[in-house]
Image (cartoon, rainbow, N blue to C red; front, top):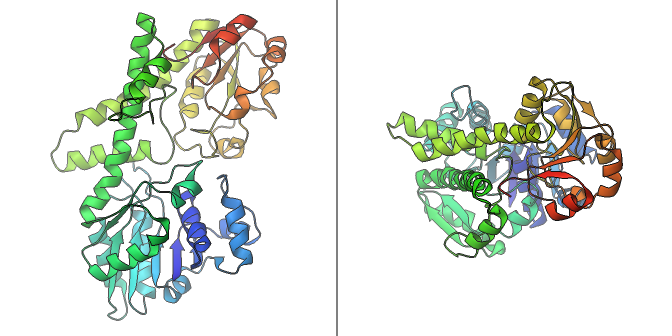
Length: 429
Protein backbone atom coordinates (compact mmCIF):
# COMPACT_ATOMS: atom_id res chain seq x y z
CA UNK A 1 0.00 0.00 0.00
CA UNK A 2 0.99 3.62 -0.46
CA UNK A 3 1.10 5.26 2.96
CA UNK A 4 1.70 8.80 4.19
CA UNK A 5 2.72 9.30 7.82
CA UNK A 6 2.30 12.84 9.13
CA UNK A 7 4.63 13.56 12.05
CA UNK A 8 8.12 12.12 12.53
CA UNK A 9 8.36 11.95 16.31
CA UNK A 10 8.73 8.70 18.23
CA UNK A 11 5.38 7.32 17.06
CA UNK A 12 5.42 8.58 13.47
CA UNK A 13 9.00 7.66 12.65
CA UNK A 14 8.75 4.19 14.18
CA UNK A 15 5.37 3.56 12.52
CA UNK A 16 6.55 4.74 9.10
CA UNK A 17 9.83 2.83 9.19
CA UNK A 18 8.19 -0.39 10.38
CA UNK A 19 5.42 -0.18 7.76
CA UNK A 20 8.14 0.24 5.13
CA UNK A 21 9.89 -2.80 6.56
CA UNK A 22 6.64 -4.71 6.01
CA UNK A 23 6.91 -3.88 2.30
CA UNK A 24 4.69 -0.81 1.96
CA UNK A 25 5.62 2.37 0.09
CA UNK A 26 5.87 5.01 2.84
CA UNK A 27 6.51 8.74 2.89
CA UNK A 28 7.05 10.29 6.34
CA UNK A 29 6.21 13.99 6.39
CA UNK A 30 6.70 16.80 8.87
CA UNK A 31 6.59 20.59 8.98
CA UNK A 32 9.94 20.60 10.80
CA UNK A 33 12.39 21.24 7.94
CA UNK A 34 15.47 20.62 10.09
CA UNK A 35 14.21 17.22 11.21
CA UNK A 36 13.36 16.16 7.65
CA UNK A 37 16.73 17.40 6.40
CA UNK A 38 18.51 15.28 9.02
CA UNK A 39 16.49 12.22 8.10
CA UNK A 40 17.24 12.74 4.41
CA UNK A 41 20.95 12.79 5.31
CA UNK A 42 20.71 9.65 7.39
CA UNK A 43 20.76 11.40 10.78
CA UNK A 44 18.27 10.15 13.36
CA UNK A 45 16.44 12.85 15.35
CA UNK A 46 15.67 10.41 18.20
CA UNK A 47 17.44 7.56 19.94
CA UNK A 48 15.49 4.31 19.62
CA UNK A 49 17.26 0.92 19.53
CA UNK A 50 16.99 -0.79 16.14
CA UNK A 51 15.29 2.13 14.38
CA UNK A 52 18.38 3.49 12.62
CA UNK A 53 19.00 0.16 10.91
CA UNK A 54 15.42 -0.15 9.67
CA UNK A 55 15.38 3.42 8.33
CA UNK A 56 18.71 2.95 6.52
CA UNK A 57 17.67 -0.41 5.05
CA UNK A 58 14.34 0.83 3.70
CA UNK A 59 15.74 4.06 2.29
CA UNK A 60 18.12 1.89 0.27
CA UNK A 61 15.17 -0.23 -0.84
CA UNK A 62 13.49 3.02 -2.01
CA UNK A 63 10.26 2.36 -0.10
CA UNK A 64 10.83 4.93 2.65
CA UNK A 65 11.23 8.64 1.99
CA UNK A 66 11.00 11.87 3.97
CA UNK A 67 9.39 15.14 2.93
CA UNK A 68 8.03 18.43 4.18
CA UNK A 69 5.38 18.34 1.45
CA UNK A 70 2.45 16.95 3.41
CA UNK A 71 -0.08 17.73 0.68
CA UNK A 72 1.86 15.74 -1.94
CA UNK A 73 2.12 12.83 0.49
CA UNK A 74 -1.63 12.86 1.06
CA UNK A 75 -2.44 13.02 -2.64
CA UNK A 76 -0.22 10.06 -3.50
CA UNK A 77 -1.33 7.77 -0.66
CA UNK A 78 -4.19 5.41 0.14
CA UNK A 79 -3.64 5.48 3.91
CA UNK A 80 -2.74 8.62 5.88
CA UNK A 81 -1.50 8.20 9.46
CA UNK A 82 -1.82 11.19 11.79
CA UNK A 83 1.05 10.90 14.29
CA UNK A 84 1.46 14.42 15.68
CA UNK A 85 1.84 15.37 19.33
CA UNK A 86 -1.02 16.16 21.69
CA UNK A 87 0.76 17.73 24.69
CA UNK A 88 -1.02 18.99 27.78
CA UNK A 89 -2.34 22.52 27.67
CA UNK A 90 -2.21 24.84 30.70
CA UNK A 91 -5.33 23.17 32.14
CA UNK A 92 -4.14 19.61 31.66
CA UNK A 93 -6.36 18.86 28.67
CA UNK A 94 -4.92 17.47 25.42
CA UNK A 95 -3.81 20.22 23.03
CA UNK A 96 -5.29 19.28 19.65
CA UNK A 97 -3.92 22.24 17.68
CA UNK A 98 -1.50 20.06 15.66
CA UNK A 99 -4.18 17.46 14.93
CA UNK A 100 -6.52 20.20 13.70
CA UNK A 101 -3.86 21.71 11.42
CA UNK A 102 -3.14 18.30 9.92
CA UNK A 103 -6.83 17.57 9.37
CA UNK A 104 -7.22 20.86 7.50
CA UNK A 105 -4.20 20.09 5.31
CA UNK A 106 -5.60 16.65 4.51
CA UNK A 107 -8.90 18.26 3.56
CA UNK A 108 -7.21 20.67 1.18
CA UNK A 109 -5.14 17.90 -0.42
CA UNK A 110 -7.65 15.06 -0.64
CA UNK A 111 -8.19 13.96 -4.25
CA UNK A 112 -9.68 10.46 -3.97
CA UNK A 113 -10.95 7.96 -1.42
CA UNK A 114 -8.59 7.86 1.58
CA UNK A 115 -8.50 6.15 4.94
CA UNK A 116 -7.21 8.54 7.58
CA UNK A 117 -5.75 6.72 10.58
CA UNK A 118 -5.58 8.70 13.80
CA UNK A 119 -2.65 7.34 15.82
CA UNK A 120 -2.25 10.45 17.93
CA UNK A 121 -3.62 10.14 21.46
CA UNK A 122 -6.77 12.24 21.37
CA UNK A 123 -9.84 12.76 23.59
CA UNK A 124 -12.94 10.71 22.94
CA UNK A 125 -14.90 12.16 20.03
CA UNK A 126 -11.87 13.41 18.10
CA UNK A 127 -12.62 11.18 15.12
CA UNK A 128 -15.69 13.32 14.44
CA UNK A 129 -13.61 16.48 14.85
CA UNK A 130 -11.05 15.29 12.28
CA UNK A 131 -13.78 14.18 9.87
CA UNK A 132 -15.55 17.53 10.10
CA UNK A 133 -12.35 19.51 9.50
CA UNK A 134 -11.40 17.41 6.47
CA UNK A 135 -14.87 17.83 4.99
CA UNK A 136 -14.94 21.59 5.65
CA UNK A 137 -11.57 22.14 3.93
CA UNK A 138 -12.02 19.87 0.94
CA UNK A 139 -12.37 21.72 -2.39
CA UNK A 140 -14.58 18.99 -3.79
CA UNK A 141 -16.52 16.03 -2.39
CA UNK A 142 -14.38 12.95 -1.94
CA UNK A 143 -15.36 9.97 0.12
CA UNK A 144 -13.05 9.14 3.01
CA UNK A 145 -13.07 7.32 6.35
CA UNK A 146 -11.34 8.24 9.58
CA UNK A 147 -10.44 5.43 11.95
CA UNK A 148 -8.90 5.34 15.40
CA UNK A 149 -5.79 3.18 15.77
CA UNK A 150 -4.07 4.02 19.07
CA UNK A 151 -0.39 3.23 19.48
CA UNK A 152 1.02 1.18 22.34
CA UNK A 153 4.72 1.65 21.64
CA UNK A 154 7.11 1.88 24.58
CA UNK A 155 10.12 4.09 24.08
CA UNK A 156 13.23 1.96 24.19
CA UNK A 157 11.42 -1.10 22.79
CA UNK A 158 9.23 0.62 20.18
CA UNK A 159 10.45 -1.38 17.17
CA UNK A 160 9.89 -4.69 18.93
CA UNK A 161 6.50 -3.49 20.19
CA UNK A 162 5.42 -2.63 16.65
CA UNK A 163 6.25 -6.05 15.24
CA UNK A 164 5.10 -8.01 18.31
CA UNK A 165 2.06 -6.14 19.65
CA UNK A 166 -0.13 -7.49 22.45
CA UNK A 167 -3.16 -6.32 20.51
CA UNK A 168 -4.23 -3.98 17.73
CA UNK A 169 -7.20 -1.69 18.34
CA UNK A 170 -9.18 -0.34 15.37
CA UNK A 171 -12.01 2.07 16.01
CA UNK A 172 -14.30 2.29 12.99
CA UNK A 173 -17.93 1.98 12.01
CA UNK A 174 -17.10 1.39 8.33
CA UNK A 175 -16.64 -2.21 7.20
CA UNK A 176 -14.43 -1.29 4.22
CA UNK A 177 -12.02 0.76 6.33
CA UNK A 178 -11.92 -1.90 9.04
CA UNK A 179 -11.14 -4.60 6.46
CA UNK A 180 -8.27 -2.55 4.99
CA UNK A 181 -6.79 -1.99 8.45
CA UNK A 182 -7.10 -5.68 9.29
CA UNK A 183 -5.30 -6.56 6.07
CA UNK A 184 -2.57 -4.02 6.83
CA UNK A 185 -1.79 -5.60 10.20
CA UNK A 186 -2.43 -9.26 9.26
CA UNK A 187 1.31 -10.11 8.91
CA UNK A 188 1.85 -9.19 12.57
CA UNK A 189 -0.40 -12.10 13.65
CA UNK A 190 -1.71 -10.18 16.67
CA UNK A 191 -5.23 -10.10 18.14
CA UNK A 192 -7.27 -7.41 16.39
CA UNK A 193 -10.15 -5.73 18.21
CA UNK A 194 -12.52 -3.76 16.01
CA UNK A 195 -14.70 -1.46 18.03
CA UNK A 196 -16.43 1.89 17.83
CA UNK A 197 -14.12 4.94 17.60
CA UNK A 198 -15.07 6.23 21.05
CA UNK A 199 -14.13 2.95 22.75
CA UNK A 200 -10.88 2.81 20.79
CA UNK A 201 -9.91 6.33 21.84
CA UNK A 202 -10.82 5.60 25.45
CA UNK A 203 -8.80 2.36 25.48
CA UNK A 204 -5.56 4.29 25.02
CA UNK A 205 -6.27 6.66 27.90
CA UNK A 206 -7.55 3.90 30.17
CA UNK A 207 -4.47 1.76 29.52
CA UNK A 208 -2.00 4.53 30.32
CA UNK A 209 -3.98 5.67 33.35
CA UNK A 210 -3.97 2.13 34.73
CA UNK A 211 -0.20 1.80 34.26
CA UNK A 212 0.39 5.17 35.91
CA UNK A 213 -1.78 4.12 38.84
CA UNK A 214 0.11 0.83 39.14
CA UNK A 215 3.44 2.67 39.42
CA UNK A 216 2.07 5.13 41.97
CA UNK A 217 0.64 2.20 43.94
CA UNK A 218 3.99 0.41 44.23
CA UNK A 219 5.68 3.69 45.20
CA UNK A 220 3.21 4.04 48.07
CA UNK A 221 3.85 0.41 49.07
CA UNK A 222 7.58 1.22 48.98
CA UNK A 223 7.16 3.95 51.59
CA UNK A 224 5.35 1.56 53.90
CA UNK A 225 8.05 -1.08 53.31
CA UNK A 226 10.70 1.35 54.55
CA UNK A 227 8.73 1.93 57.76
CA UNK A 228 8.16 -1.74 58.57
CA UNK A 229 11.46 -3.22 57.35
CA UNK A 230 10.23 -4.98 54.19
CA UNK A 231 11.94 -4.88 50.77
CA UNK A 232 9.66 -3.56 48.03
CA UNK A 233 11.58 -5.51 45.36
CA UNK A 234 10.71 -8.77 47.12
CA UNK A 235 7.13 -7.60 47.64
CA UNK A 236 6.76 -6.68 43.96
CA UNK A 237 8.23 -10.03 42.92
CA UNK A 238 5.70 -11.84 45.09
CA UNK A 239 2.85 -9.75 43.69
CA UNK A 240 4.03 -10.19 40.11
CA UNK A 241 3.71 -13.97 40.22
CA UNK A 242 -0.04 -13.48 40.58
CA UNK A 243 -1.39 -13.71 37.01
CA UNK A 244 -4.12 -11.23 37.88
CA UNK A 245 -1.46 -8.60 38.65
CA UNK A 246 1.69 -9.43 36.66
CA UNK A 247 5.21 -8.05 37.19
CA UNK A 248 5.12 -5.20 34.67
CA UNK A 249 5.14 -1.63 36.06
CA UNK A 250 5.72 -2.80 39.64
CA UNK A 251 9.09 -1.08 39.97
CA UNK A 252 9.29 1.50 42.74
CA UNK A 253 11.41 4.49 41.91
CA UNK A 254 11.51 8.20 41.21
CA UNK A 255 8.07 8.24 39.59
CA UNK A 256 6.74 8.07 36.05
CA UNK A 257 7.51 10.47 33.23
CA UNK A 258 7.83 10.53 29.47
CA UNK A 259 5.55 11.60 26.67
CA UNK A 260 2.50 9.48 27.58
CA UNK A 261 1.70 8.71 31.21
CA UNK A 262 1.88 12.29 32.60
CA UNK A 263 -0.08 14.00 29.84
CA UNK A 264 -2.59 11.19 29.29
CA UNK A 265 -3.34 10.91 33.00
CA UNK A 266 -3.96 14.64 33.25
CA UNK A 267 -6.04 14.61 30.07
CA UNK A 268 -8.25 11.78 31.35
CA UNK A 269 -8.80 13.60 34.65
CA UNK A 270 -9.78 16.70 32.67
CA UNK A 271 -12.03 14.64 30.39
CA UNK A 272 -13.77 13.20 33.43
CA UNK A 273 -14.26 16.68 34.91
CA UNK A 274 -15.81 17.95 31.68
CA UNK A 275 -18.37 15.15 31.86
CA UNK A 276 -19.10 15.67 35.57
CA UNK A 277 -17.26 12.51 36.64
CA UNK A 278 -14.90 12.41 39.62
CA UNK A 279 -11.82 10.31 38.85
CA UNK A 280 -10.37 10.50 42.37
CA UNK A 281 -8.26 7.36 41.95
CA UNK A 282 -6.30 8.79 39.01
CA UNK A 283 -6.09 12.20 40.68
CA UNK A 284 -4.46 10.44 43.62
CA UNK A 285 -2.00 8.64 41.33
CA UNK A 286 -0.94 11.97 39.79
CA UNK A 287 -0.51 13.54 43.24
CA UNK A 288 1.54 10.58 44.51
CA UNK A 289 3.83 10.85 41.50
CA UNK A 290 4.50 14.51 42.19
CA UNK A 291 5.17 13.76 45.87
CA UNK A 292 7.64 11.03 44.89
CA UNK A 293 10.01 13.62 43.49
CA UNK A 294 10.07 15.42 46.84
CA UNK A 295 10.56 12.06 48.55
CA UNK A 296 13.66 11.30 46.46
CA UNK A 297 15.09 14.74 47.25
CA UNK A 298 14.55 14.12 50.96
CA UNK A 299 16.64 10.94 50.70
CA UNK A 300 19.58 12.97 49.41
CA UNK A 301 19.26 15.25 52.44
CA UNK A 302 19.00 12.22 54.73
CA UNK A 303 22.46 11.02 53.68
CA UNK A 304 24.39 14.28 53.22
CA UNK A 305 22.52 16.70 55.49
CA UNK A 306 21.93 20.30 54.45
CA UNK A 307 22.38 20.63 50.68
CA UNK A 308 23.58 24.22 50.56
CA UNK A 309 27.12 24.29 49.21
CA UNK A 310 27.17 20.55 48.47
CA UNK A 311 27.83 18.91 45.08
CA UNK A 312 25.31 16.31 43.97
CA UNK A 313 26.09 14.04 41.02
CA UNK A 314 23.12 12.93 38.92
CA UNK A 315 23.31 9.66 36.99
CA UNK A 316 20.64 9.55 34.28
CA UNK A 317 18.39 12.23 32.81
CA UNK A 318 15.98 10.37 30.52
CA UNK A 319 12.73 9.20 32.08
CA UNK A 320 13.70 5.58 31.40
CA UNK A 321 16.70 3.72 29.91
CA UNK A 322 17.21 3.14 26.17
CA UNK A 323 15.70 6.47 25.13
CA UNK A 324 16.85 10.08 24.87
CA UNK A 325 13.38 11.38 25.75
CA UNK A 326 13.42 13.75 28.72
CA UNK A 327 9.85 14.99 28.47
CA UNK A 328 8.40 15.13 32.00
CA UNK A 329 11.40 13.16 33.25
CA UNK A 330 11.49 13.04 37.07
CA UNK A 331 15.09 14.28 36.76
CA UNK A 332 13.84 17.76 35.83
CA UNK A 333 11.82 18.38 39.00
CA UNK A 334 14.29 16.59 41.28
CA UNK A 335 17.28 18.57 40.01
CA UNK A 336 15.32 21.82 40.36
CA UNK A 337 14.46 20.92 43.97
CA UNK A 338 18.10 20.08 44.78
CA UNK A 339 19.30 23.34 43.24
CA UNK A 340 16.65 25.30 45.13
CA UNK A 341 18.20 24.02 48.35
CA UNK A 342 21.55 25.54 47.39
CA UNK A 343 23.40 22.54 45.98
CA UNK A 344 25.53 22.49 42.84
CA UNK A 345 24.58 19.76 40.38
CA UNK A 346 26.71 17.67 38.00
CA UNK A 347 24.92 15.40 35.53
CA UNK A 348 25.59 12.58 33.09
CA UNK A 349 23.42 10.51 30.74
CA UNK A 350 24.63 8.20 27.95
CA UNK A 351 22.32 9.66 25.27
CA UNK A 352 19.91 12.26 26.70
CA UNK A 353 22.20 15.17 27.58
CA UNK A 354 21.60 17.18 24.39
CA UNK A 355 17.83 17.08 24.90
CA UNK A 356 18.23 17.94 28.58
CA UNK A 357 20.34 20.98 27.76
CA UNK A 358 17.26 22.47 26.08
CA UNK A 359 15.53 22.38 29.48
CA UNK A 360 18.28 23.07 32.04
CA UNK A 361 21.49 24.96 31.33
CA UNK A 362 22.70 25.88 34.82
CA UNK A 363 24.09 22.45 35.71
CA UNK A 364 27.50 20.96 34.95
CA UNK A 365 27.32 18.43 32.12
CA UNK A 366 29.93 15.68 32.32
CA UNK A 367 31.42 13.30 29.76
CA UNK A 368 31.10 10.15 31.84
CA UNK A 369 29.99 8.75 35.19
CA UNK A 370 33.42 9.12 36.77
CA UNK A 371 33.62 12.82 35.95
CA UNK A 372 30.26 13.27 37.68
CA UNK A 373 31.57 11.39 40.71
CA UNK A 374 34.75 13.41 41.20
CA UNK A 375 34.27 15.83 44.08
CA UNK A 376 30.58 15.02 44.59
CA UNK A 377 29.06 14.65 48.05
CA UNK A 378 26.51 12.11 46.80
CA UNK A 379 25.47 10.26 43.67
CA UNK A 380 21.79 10.11 42.76
CA UNK A 381 20.81 7.46 40.21
CA UNK A 382 17.65 8.53 38.34
CA UNK A 383 17.74 6.26 35.25
CA UNK A 384 18.41 2.53 35.30
CA UNK A 385 20.88 2.48 32.41
CA UNK A 386 22.72 -0.83 32.08
CA UNK A 387 25.97 1.14 32.02
CA UNK A 388 25.38 2.28 35.60
CA UNK A 389 24.96 -1.26 36.89
CA UNK A 390 28.44 -2.12 35.59
CA UNK A 391 30.37 0.86 36.93
CA UNK A 392 33.70 0.42 38.71
CA UNK A 393 32.40 1.24 42.19
CA UNK A 394 35.78 0.85 43.95
CA UNK A 395 37.03 3.59 41.59
CA UNK A 396 33.94 5.66 42.37
CA UNK A 397 34.68 5.24 46.09
CA UNK A 398 38.09 6.82 45.50
CA UNK A 399 36.73 9.72 43.48
CA UNK A 400 33.69 10.71 45.52
CA UNK A 401 33.99 13.34 48.26
CA UNK A 402 31.48 11.57 50.53
CA UNK A 403 30.45 7.92 49.90
CA UNK A 404 26.68 8.41 49.60
CA UNK A 405 24.55 6.71 46.93
CA UNK A 406 20.84 7.28 46.46
CA UNK A 407 19.50 4.60 44.14
CA UNK A 408 16.15 6.03 43.04
CA UNK A 409 15.60 3.19 40.55
CA UNK A 410 16.66 0.26 42.78
CA UNK A 411 19.04 -0.83 40.02
CA UNK A 412 22.15 -1.37 42.14
CA UNK A 413 23.21 -4.03 44.66
CA UNK A 414 22.81 -2.46 48.13
CA UNK A 415 24.66 -5.27 49.92
CA UNK A 416 27.75 -5.00 47.71
CA UNK A 417 27.80 -1.20 47.97
CA UNK A 418 27.48 -1.21 51.76
CA UNK A 419 30.31 -3.76 51.95
CA UNK A 420 32.50 -1.32 50.01
CA UNK A 421 31.73 1.36 52.58
CA UNK A 422 29.04 3.33 50.77
CA UNK A 423 26.03 4.83 52.54
CA UNK A 424 23.09 3.54 50.48
CA UNK A 425 19.46 4.61 50.15
CA UNK A 426 17.06 2.90 47.77
CA UNK A 427 13.31 3.19 47.40
CA UNK A 428 11.34 0.92 49.72
CA UNK A 429 14.40 -1.14 50.77
